[in-house]
Length: 295
Image (cartoon, rainbow, N blue to C red; front, side, top):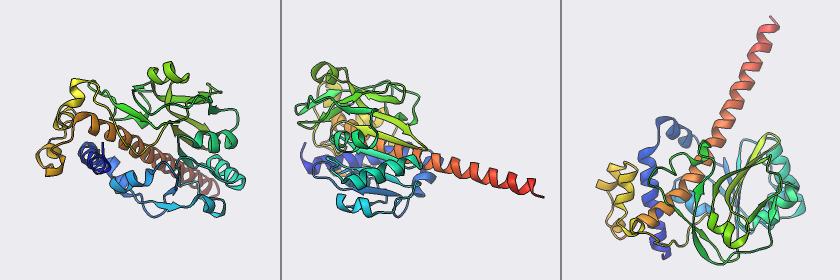
């Protein structure tokens, strides 16, 4: 899939997601502004391009600036592959998550960020993948990060960049596997695709390979059919009826892959914002209780 068609697939996915979202989800997304999302640029992944397509405000910084940045725990920090940052930045990332921040990392950041920042939780298994597209399955269906992704017809494909880093879980008590792939496990020894874990007051989410989709494969007859079939599965009638002309050559496989990628990030942002809204309510409740007690 060329870069132009890839962006078109993401645009179609955005329309479907927009038609599906609840009023509450729209309000939360509309509240994202300024530097609520900080993206550390990478050589290989470009999460910021998907954020741009989804109209999610964010700022992009060079990896060398991270150690100098004053991060707030109400922010979401995204570190693109490869995630090669300084020791000072590693310490800053760890303290940021411990204080309540949300961290989202991709591929090689497993080795260069998560291993040194959160020792003993996850690591690279030293068996880098080949360039491949694999089938994936949900393993935590109740987790809100997966809301709207794996319905009864879902069969998304996950693209693995050549030399992607399989995720070895060291502490199963702390790590939740959100999306899994038996195919990755069979071929490269570890099956997790998307994982999350809590650390201090914050949360970390990591995924194998790159967030910014570069290609997919059409493994089934369903994948090869026109994209409107996927919009119909998602009950996105307005998207189907008002689609731009450039959507006409898209297929289900392409839009489903873009949708899955986009929805994971969107759900992550919503989860982060809801966590902070809940904390603000707790603080307000505690402050009111202290005020009442002092009267």
